[in-house]
Image (cartoon, rainbow, N blue to C red; front, side, top):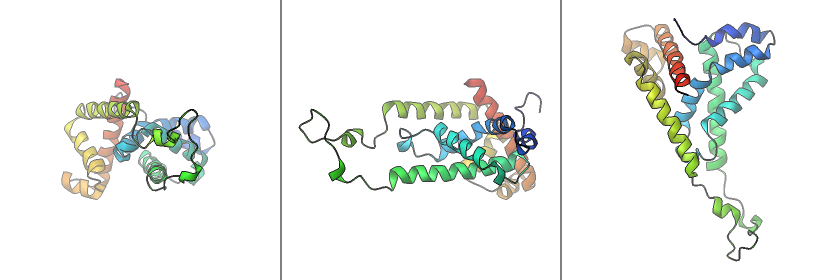
Length: 201
């Protein structure tokens, strides 16, 4: 595709031979796709605790550490593997802030000079900060603008895949194409979305 962002798979052979630079290039080519997934899945109330970019960076660190476990050879397989790592990290992140009980009151230390007994954790609370909300809002708006610039078939396949979580078999049936053709269309759509996000950043 003229002017397209290079396919991540072109760096995989060198990455398998131990090139950290090639692995970094392959992962970087997947960044905007993973940001798209993270922004969709991350509860807005938790944005102030850690943004989508933090989760993607953590995923990249794990991917570099565990790359020997990756058995695929295509960009689609790499994206699927990274998505699983990302969703695991997102689940851990959500449980850490949602499912963990409050700290025991006996362990709280009153703030110096505060006679009310109010503790630091009371002040911090679980409410997202204005800056965290603003950042999440900006990321969401950038994504929406980039989506709006996509051709209709690209936008539709991304919506089916991410918002409606449809399989490639289902998408293929709706498009009257094979599942493989549906996946190729999705990869082109991800590639184009990545270009749109990069051009506006």
